[in-house]
Length: 366
Image 1 (cartoon, rainbow, N blue to C red):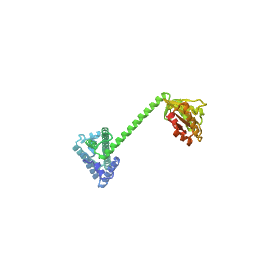
Image 2: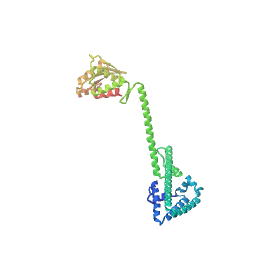
Image 3: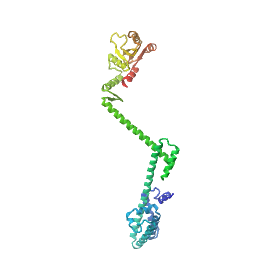
Image 4: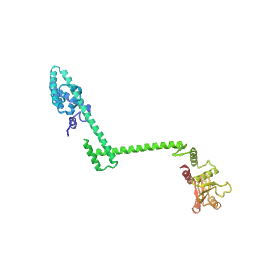
């Protein structure tokens, strides 16, 4: 493979050319030429070196010097450079060099300034050549990126080994020579980028749907409360129930708590009716659903005041009067151990504070 002078200097670790930084290379070029100036016995020898180097560079088109010179309109007007022929241009440079030597003899300072300007021009050409190579390298990277995108479009998240080999051949065909590992990593990066982009797009769509849903709910007059939507009356009820759960319904009277319990069973699918306040025979509410009749006794007790067995037995005794299939005894406190033993042998459910609160959350708050 053809190696440019910049690559050769960089590969051999020549000071000033190791990193291929344009301004460092330009300064190094000028510095080395100045060292040559002091190395030779006179300005004439230095001028000969510069002229010879420049003539060889133009003839061989090192660093694309000849091509770049021909792109400058002023140079195209100089005799010997108009045709762009390398032989004529080389002869012209040698001829102008002899003129320079004459100037060296007559006016050394003018010649020295001219040589410095020539070195600066060479430095600019070196910098432009490096920039051109860098742009070409960037263009190759961009083209390789297009190959990677097309590759992921075609093979998705699980390309085969044969697919990777096909990709490598396509890159080589376009003059892009890369090892397998960087190509493999680029494919993974592109796959990850697309996965993240897809998630972001889905999040945007979800957010748009959420906002549209909220607009529709608000248009219906609904209010959002802790992730739920309800009418103003429902939201007010949820807040009251939350307060009741927090203080165990201490603010409700016994009759208010009975009505609240009746509403709970209505939400459970029953038709619930509160019995008269006197002579209820241990039944506060009668609930019915299809062929099932449930007798409900409610005791609003403070915590620590547990329900005794006699209260449970009294409720069981009321089953025959109301022709109920089973009984549910509800309290805001708890039951004694002996009262619990009755539940095991009789058609009755005992709801303490914990069970009651769970049922309220299930049917009122969800």
